[in-house]
Length: 180
Image (cartoon, rainbow, N blue to C red; front, side, top):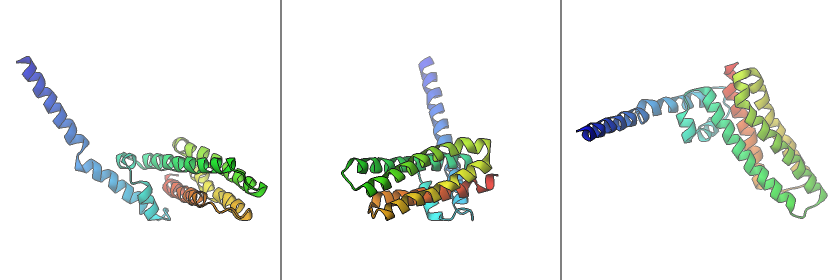
């Protein structure tokens, strides 16, 4: 009798948790938050925002701060990927101008990774500083773009990474703009 009672309690608990965890209102609330954030006038590229926030972590977010955290972690991951490409290119024989351009880009990406990584913590302390700091990352990507162009380096993966830096910077700036 005790084991049957225990079985019923376990079954009830599982059913109760599954109803609460997978409740449509929770899922739609997170999607509604993402849609609201991405449709804000401060977000310049609504499609990029929706794409960047189309993952399980974003869907689990309950606040804009949590969405900012998700976006900044995605930005760090993408920047790491591009930084790895830059490091691999630096290992190959190349002209001094190419190597100098790649070093410039390497510095840009190291700084961007550090900056994107600080935004979430900074946001909880001073939203205006977080907003300002994230806005500086996009223009910093221009430094890499200009260095590559000056050395006549054709590197599509780095070009895509620069594009991502600019978009994530814009996204972070737009998401934090109204939190001041």
